[in-house]
Length: 243
Image (cartoon, rainbow, N blue to C red):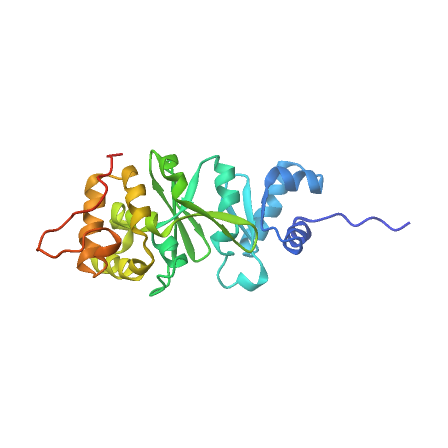
C-alpha cells in the first residue's frame, strides 16, 4: 500500500503562490494541513528562519516568492488590503508612497505609508517598513480615494490631490521641507483645482493655506488658486474645516 504523503506548510505556501495568493491565516493553514496550533507555530517558525515566510500580525502570514527572496518579502501592495482587512480598519495608501504611485519617482521610497483610524505599530517586512499614520476622520476623505490594481488584487490609494494635502498635513513623514517641495513640484502639473477645493473642506485651514503657499512658490499657483499678481498670498478657494 502506498502511504499518502502529508501536506506540509512549505508545500501549502507554495500552492498559494501558484494560485496567485501570498497571504494566509494560521486558522486557514491549520485546517488545510489538519494540524493543531502548536505544530503550525513550529512549522511557521522554521519557514521564518529560512526567510520563506513573514509574520505580519499574530495569526497572519505572507509568503515570500523566490523572486523577492533578496528583499525578504513581496511588495506591501501585494498584501496591504488583506492586512487591513485582518486589522478590520479602513485605510488608504498615502504620503510618499502615494506620491510615487502618482509619478513622483525622484527617489526610492523604503517606507510604505498607510493612513488609518487607529494608532498601529509599524511592520518591518523584509527591507520595507510599513508605517501607519493616524487620522481620526479617515472616512471623511473616502471619496478622494482610488482603487489601484495590484499583482494580487487591489489596494486603496489617495488621489493625487489628497496626496498633496496630506503630505503637508504629515510633513514630518515627507523627509523635510526640501524633499516635500521636490515631491510637490512633481505632483503640481497633475493637480486639479476643483478637486483640491472640494477635498480641502476635510482639512485644517492651516494645511490648505500652506499647500497653496508652497504650490505658488513652486510655480503651480494656478492649481490652487494662489497665483499672485499683486504680491498677496494664500487665496486658496476653499477654507477647510479643522479635524
